[in-house]
Image (cartoon, rainbow, N blue to C red; front, side, top):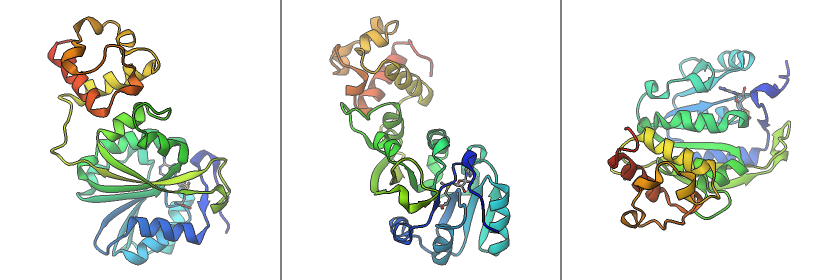
Amino acid sequence: MAHQARKRFGQHFLTDEGVIDAIVRGIDPRRDDKMIEIGPGLSALTGPLLNALDHLTVVEIDRDLAARLRSSHSPKRLTVIEQDALTVDFSALGNGLRIVGNLPYNISSPLLFHLMSSAEQVRDQHFMLQREVIDRMVAQPSSADYGRLSVMLQSRYRMVKLFDVDPESFDPPPRVVSAVVRMVPLPETRHKPASAKAFEQVVARAFAQRRKMLRRGLADWTPSIDWDALGIPATARAEELSVEQFILLTDHLLDKGVLAG
Ligand code: SAM
């Protein structure tokens, strides 16, 4: 029976063979990869991925689609986790994970943040998302798209936008242009803030008023900040600070005892 696309699950199924092929080539699956696909839907990517892999795990929230997947693939080749991806503990699924998916756009930011907590066990991630979200993910300082999402994700991943995908490549077509991004976790040796929680707090607070000078936006912390020692102009705005400078600022605030770890 034909599946009726469900809006609440952000269902837009890929139908363009050229795009499917380009995504699978971008992922470059190898037989013994430990791959997890989020939101397999009607198997547009699942089928070609399974052709290249010994085994694939999928996470699908829609009960009918999960049942279809179980009936059309052997459990030896395909493990179906019927669950909301936001509640899946990906770190429990192994090491060296490769995570892929044409994600439901309505939960893309929360899902990207949720996956950050498992980044140590991830080799890479390839996602199709709204192009506007990917532009924000990869944006550089002093550009209009640079913000909390850019800083938080760039502190943990190296990211490359691969290509755009037109709405006509889906059924039903979404209202926006999509794009594909590759995310590779940065190594353990990366420069990290002394406290991930404090870093999150500083970045969120700084971008709450992105156009204000930081010294005004961070008003109650400002008397403790030695801008010269940080090498950050006292007149800087959040959108002008690099990821590295956000890390330095966080550690400075921790050192001064303004923030707790
Ligand atoms: N991969 C398929 C394709 O490319 O044609 C489907 C992509 S569709 C944009 C998103 C898929 O994610 C749907 O199958 C939908 O049911 C599923 N989905 C939506 N919300 C989800 C969630 N919270 N957890 C897991 N899967 C979800």
